[in-house]
Length: 381
Image 1 (cartoon, rainbow, N blue to C red):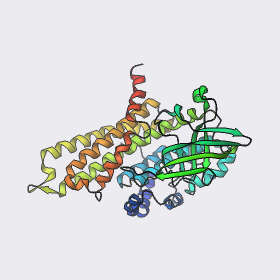
Image 2 (cartoon, helix red, strand yellow):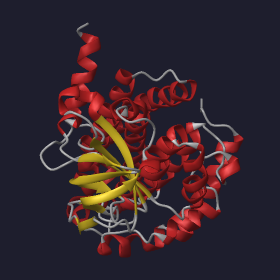
Image 3 (cartoon, rainbow, N blue to C red):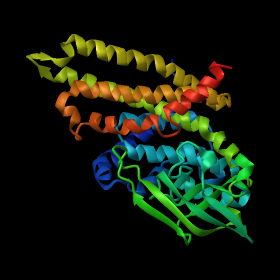
């Protein structure tokens, strides 16, 4: 049974054709360059693959159905697009909801058309050197000065950090003693004086997802660039965490399925000791285990997607989706690579890139340990 209808499958066919023509041929070059060509966002926007949730009045799809996002993410995994797919997932699944939900009417007019068209690439800057998942400990501050906020601080590990035009920055705008109530969201725009991008970080995987350090030195951010209300950032960040974590878990299952398919094809073609690798008992047992894990997980992920659409996806269930999906991705790519032997270690094989890319999945969006902590609160209640 599938959660997708004909519209979703037509969307899948359309995106798959786009990705094969506009993305897949360039993946190797983007991986070497450490960044995806930002023109891809513009091309994707022309075909309706960015800003699906942006209202039609602002050039978007006007559809809040997360199944379209899920289809896009599944195809990015199936085609082995790596970091390029991650950048697009972040733009659609993680940052766009903040703009759709919390923009003022003036901000919607100013930003949403560009977000939908791919002209404005988005990012969100939460993590700081030394804070990791501890958002309450961020040190970036903004002080009100007339009609502006003066922003100072530094962020790291920011996906789309180089390509981004709009960066949602979490910072302290009040007394640190106020705890969560002292945090707000400011939108910093490309070219603002004092806003500097550091190096494009050299990662072990997801190379074409530009990941950067960002620095803010007396950046004067207009008050009209406050996203939502002052002091409510923690609430806003929590609002979209369920969708973000589901997206990561969903991608993990799709990546595991893709790895399985590549491996099945390889072991049926490759021989050892005069026999296809597929004929060995170890191969049969291992791939049977992986196939079962993927098959058992998919209905759970599908159910989470439908709960998200209905507004019923709880933080705990989202954490379970992220924990299981990302861990499945990590162990599946590891086990599948083993069956490729030495060829699995060659970057020309998609399993090699998938293996390296998978390592971050249990870290970003909240580590597996954080997910277990969230889940345990309900288990032990």
